[in-house]
Image (tube, rainbow, N blue to C red; front, side, top):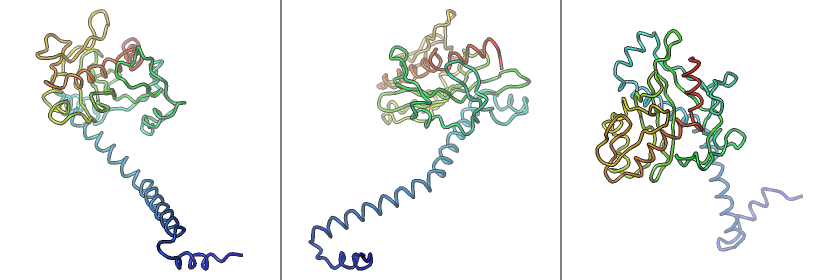
Length: 266
């Protein structure tokens, strides 16, 4: 029977130029590195997720702070945070058997059983797939909806864009748009994170009288309630933001939920 200690000593006694020793050391180094990386990934993942959640919450707080009188409304309603609910995007109904705070939308998106392919004709945001469910954030008082915040995403010029879109109680007026993640060109497309540009969205209308979603980001100066000024040299990024909003407020996004909310209330 082989003695592991003797085998190891024999391995170490080999000449440093010996192929068996060279390849053996390489394999051992790779194995140790893999173990270290895997251990670090598992150990640090909760910290990373907690950091990301804290950052998302901070951006949500910042968005609320930019809404006129929103803090006062929340204080008057006796709440200090938005209520998180989970929505079945296909039916627009609330999901009651899944804890929205523990729902991992990104993991669901990567699971074929928890996501669906987006039809090409509907995929104006370039996402290809979406999860079956999505979280929404509601501000209400005595059963009356004051604000709904929707997480939206889409493809920009060179990155995936993620944002929080807040709608007023009429579900057609933008209360705020806050970009929470982007990797666009610095000094050009990345300016979608500028507070001044995001402030233009406030008060804009999503759909016209016929119900068609017509909001857009235009080149040059915007005209009317359905347009937002574009960013010079970043038209593809601006179009990406507009397409993101149009997709998620459409029939394959939050459209069924918003229609149901409009008809049935909370």
